[in-house]
Length: 375
Figure 1: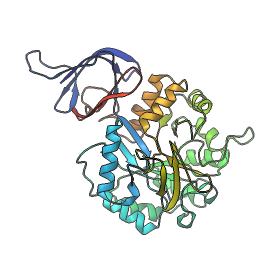
Figure 2: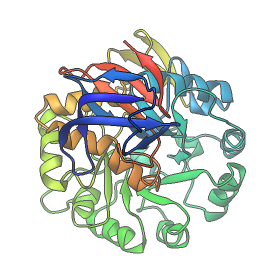
Figure 3: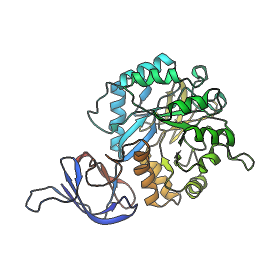
Figure 4: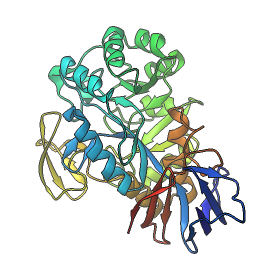
């Protein structure tokens, strides 16, 4: 297959008008002139790598924590239709046995169709009660390496990210022991700056949905946010939907951290792709109006939007398109260790890409070189 004359996003983070060559589901440098290949006209279209969402919960009425392969596959199909070609769904804070069964079931999941399942983001249960957000307080636990190991073993060692509140008893020991086994992400925490710095020094390298469910950045105590800005090897997740963060904060975050350290996420819940109404998240009742999802007390409970929409929103807020694409493709691929296989339109990598029109609407989605979706 040849896609001709598209504006191709490169690893240099710029758009270059050129042709894309695909063979056997892989990007290649060229194809023999005498081969009979399908030719796609990409004139006037942006070609970007397939998006990678490393923090979402569900879509189309299903949640990863439903604990079935059917739920995961329906989520995967929806995500693929939205230009997300790989994902790591997140758990909620549930009873340990329920989490165990969810992890065990994920071990048997095989990507039949849709977005590629890359592993699990264990968002609960090691969270601070004061910053629990939409997580059930009765199931929260102090950081426990044995609990993590049990869940990780059940999943076939598919837990890619663990969110942990560094202000909890035992957090530093947890981070130090597991830093070479998974990505330790600070979040759902009232941690001050000094505690967060210590956690990063111990081996944490990630922040779960920056600003949300954490102490604010104050001029005398910048908290996790300031500590992350001072940490060179840290990635921060950002929900740029205009609801979780004001447009000014989205722009300011790119100025503070730079596009080398930001990962755009959706944090989408089961109402994504559905009509307004009442849904559940981890057993809690959630009301959804548009892209806003809230608990009965008004707490924001995830989102009802896609990563592609968050990318568009970021651009509409003043973030350069090149930066937004980088933060939804290359950066998440690098963070979870799959950049050798995906995350850029580069020879030798999986041919996952999205064609966008000038208004950033999806024209086509390709997964492993096959057209998955077309408008």
